[in-house]
Image: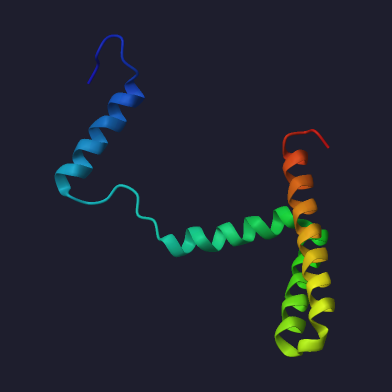
Length: 101
Protein backbone atom coordinates (compact mmCIF):
# COMPACT_ATOMS: atom_id res chain seq x y z
CA UNK A 1 0.00 0.00 0.00
CA UNK A 2 1.55 3.31 -1.03
CA UNK A 3 0.30 6.42 0.71
CA UNK A 4 1.96 9.71 -0.11
CA UNK A 5 3.65 11.42 2.83
CA UNK A 6 3.74 8.39 5.14
CA UNK A 7 6.63 6.12 6.01
CA UNK A 8 6.09 2.72 4.33
CA UNK A 9 7.64 0.90 7.31
CA UNK A 10 5.14 2.53 9.64
CA UNK A 11 2.29 1.52 7.36
CA UNK A 12 3.57 -2.08 7.19
CA UNK A 13 3.91 -2.20 10.98
CA UNK A 14 0.40 -0.80 11.41
CA UNK A 15 -1.00 -3.39 9.00
CA UNK A 16 0.77 -6.22 10.86
CA UNK A 17 -0.65 -4.84 14.10
CA UNK A 18 -4.14 -4.91 12.62
CA UNK A 19 -3.60 -8.51 11.50
CA UNK A 20 -2.34 -9.49 14.94
CA UNK A 21 -5.36 -7.90 16.59
CA UNK A 22 -7.74 -9.50 14.09
CA UNK A 23 -6.26 -12.94 14.81
CA UNK A 24 -6.53 -12.17 18.55
CA UNK A 25 -2.98 -13.11 19.47
CA UNK A 26 -0.59 -11.06 21.58
CA UNK A 27 2.13 -9.23 19.69
CA UNK A 28 4.77 -9.36 22.44
CA UNK A 29 4.75 -12.21 24.90
CA UNK A 30 6.85 -11.48 27.98
CA UNK A 31 7.22 -13.25 31.27
CA UNK A 32 7.68 -11.15 34.39
CA UNK A 33 10.09 -13.73 35.83
CA UNK A 34 12.52 -13.17 32.96
CA UNK A 35 12.43 -9.44 33.62
CA UNK A 36 13.05 -9.91 37.33
CA UNK A 37 15.98 -12.24 36.69
CA UNK A 38 17.67 -9.86 34.31
CA UNK A 39 17.12 -6.95 36.72
CA UNK A 40 19.03 -8.77 39.46
CA UNK A 41 21.88 -9.57 37.07
CA UNK A 42 22.03 -5.94 35.91
CA UNK A 43 22.09 -4.74 39.51
CA UNK A 44 24.96 -7.08 40.40
CA UNK A 45 26.92 -5.95 37.32
CA UNK A 46 26.42 -2.31 38.31
CA UNK A 47 27.51 -2.94 41.89
CA UNK A 48 30.94 -4.26 41.00
CA UNK A 49 33.30 -5.96 43.43
CA UNK A 50 33.07 -3.25 46.08
CA UNK A 51 29.27 -3.31 46.08
CA UNK A 52 29.15 -7.09 46.31
CA UNK A 53 31.60 -6.94 49.23
CA UNK A 54 29.25 -4.42 50.82
CA UNK A 55 26.31 -6.76 50.42
CA UNK A 56 28.30 -9.58 52.03
CA UNK A 57 29.14 -7.31 54.97
CA UNK A 58 25.48 -6.31 55.33
CA UNK A 59 24.43 -9.96 55.40
CA UNK A 60 27.17 -10.81 57.91
CA UNK A 61 26.01 -7.96 60.13
CA UNK A 62 22.40 -9.07 60.04
CA UNK A 63 23.55 -12.59 60.83
CA UNK A 64 25.46 -11.41 63.88
CA UNK A 65 22.50 -9.38 65.14
CA UNK A 66 20.19 -12.36 64.78
CA UNK A 67 22.62 -14.87 66.29
CA UNK A 68 23.78 -13.46 69.61
CA UNK A 69 22.54 -10.49 71.62
CA UNK A 70 25.87 -9.22 73.04
CA UNK A 71 27.23 -8.77 69.55
CA UNK A 72 24.54 -6.27 68.57
CA UNK A 73 27.04 -3.42 68.47
CA UNK A 74 29.38 -5.33 66.17
CA UNK A 75 26.53 -6.38 63.94
CA UNK A 76 25.20 -2.85 63.67
CA UNK A 77 28.67 -1.57 62.77
CA UNK A 78 28.95 -4.15 60.01
CA UNK A 79 25.50 -3.25 58.67
CA UNK A 80 26.35 0.44 58.55
CA UNK A 81 29.73 -0.21 56.90
CA UNK A 82 28.16 -2.52 54.33
CA UNK A 83 25.42 -0.05 53.44
CA UNK A 84 28.05 2.63 53.01
CA UNK A 85 30.00 0.45 50.57
CA UNK A 86 26.84 -0.42 48.61
CA UNK A 87 25.78 3.23 48.32
CA UNK A 88 29.27 4.32 47.30
CA UNK A 89 29.42 1.63 44.62
CA UNK A 90 25.97 2.48 43.23
CA UNK A 91 26.76 6.19 43.05
CA UNK A 92 30.15 5.52 41.43
CA UNK A 93 28.50 3.28 38.83
CA UNK A 94 25.84 5.89 38.10
CA UNK A 95 28.43 8.63 37.69
CA UNK A 96 30.50 6.41 35.38
CA UNK A 97 27.42 5.81 33.22
CA UNK A 98 27.04 9.57 32.86
CA UNK A 99 30.76 9.94 32.11
CA UNK A 100 31.40 12.09 35.17
CA UNK A 101 33.79 9.83 37.10
